[in-house]
Length: 262
Ligand code: PGA
Image (cartoon, rainbow, N blue to C red; front, side, top):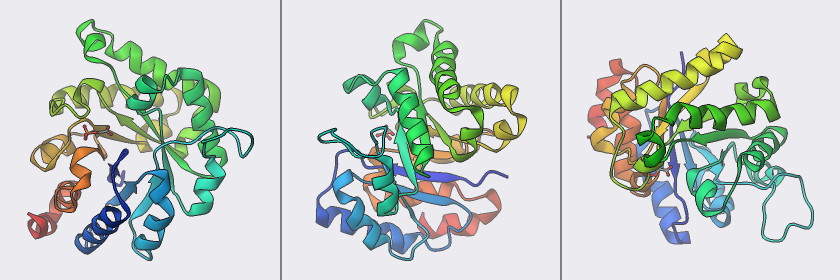
């Protein structure tokens, strides 16, 4: 049984007071969501404060990026061990905004994934095709390349600590969402890809959907067999919206919990 994971990617948003309000809002509503994992991913500068605010709650903390290596002359960068030292559990690797805006290539992303594992962090490897690639029937080739390059560099066993997020680039921040069937097709493909190498890892790895997931569409996406949670951007900046998505991720027999935040 894979435990659902709902992760809020706050991107480059938030002031100290907004981070405080958001974490307090999520904490207040998160009681009773023991059957799912909840994760927030603030900016680097808000991580320490977020850790203090999360306090003894079960909500986990993650970073949006790291630089490979442990320390050194890399002005402006942050290493995995620093994030672990701050109390981070997870780190995003290869988000499409990093691939596109910051020109991160397959080799750098694989090195970052390895660095996360070495630092004891759980990498969330983001993969996804552009609209153009989808229209040209290249979705499977692109996703396969994005995952295989990491397997080659880090080894399949590293995926026991990892999460994969399927985020079609055309759905990120656009309001367009993959249909549950479109998303399920790719999630099933990703699981099969890993299963061919290691059946157990294929069965147990969590695969999140990301791309304009919100309260209104979360239930139908999360109901799909191979969708184990969500990586939420815009809708994670509002505690009530984020909590509704968390409620939608609760196992079906817990409809009482769903009613709580609806
Ligand atoms: P979105 O972002 O929910 O705003 O589309 C998702 C993401 O980029 O992780």
